[in-house]
Length: 149
Image (cartoon, rainbow, N blue to C red; front, side):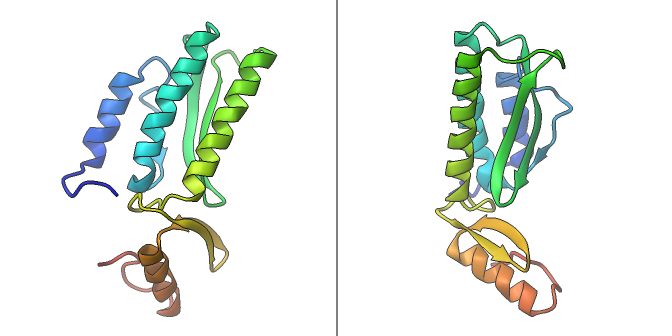
């Protein structure tokens, strides 16, 4: 769970400084706060893998988003027609699976334990509290705040 004094913009700004080699200022964090700690851990992992293979200055994050209830961090070669060597590609695929697996059991709103559910055709990884709030919001005709205390 995120601390009560958590500040999203400060946290993201710190990530941008710490991971400036692979995280351009233009990349949007198109996820809720609950996954930001996962992102921080995986950015560190990505840099470790890329450095090990001599690719730290040759790869860049293109997107950070949610898709089908899971976190996606797209890290691609800086040069469009370049491809990762096989060993690096395998490690990056392993990292992609870790990102996906961890996010599927983490509430994207608060960071507590959660699971992916289908909410009126929209998939989200939510804890029981936020799952209840989302379902109640749908039952109200999608009116008012979705996530309220």
